Image (cartoon, rainbow, N blue to C red):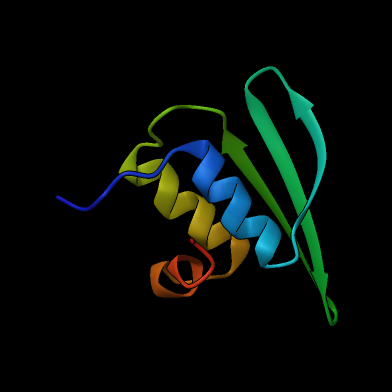
Length: 74
């Protein structure tokens, strides 16, 4: 089974990847990034462990692979 990350770790990595937090509604945090003519909006649930399916969805929304995101995790 792959390692599960907390929302805090994912948010930090996305912010290092130039995403900006634009809003929060309840436990869901919305981040945004504009890259060229593409816009990326990512929703991250503020949980201690983000489920693997949710993590996959976050990667898809961010237009990143797991390896790319892990490069921003310190």
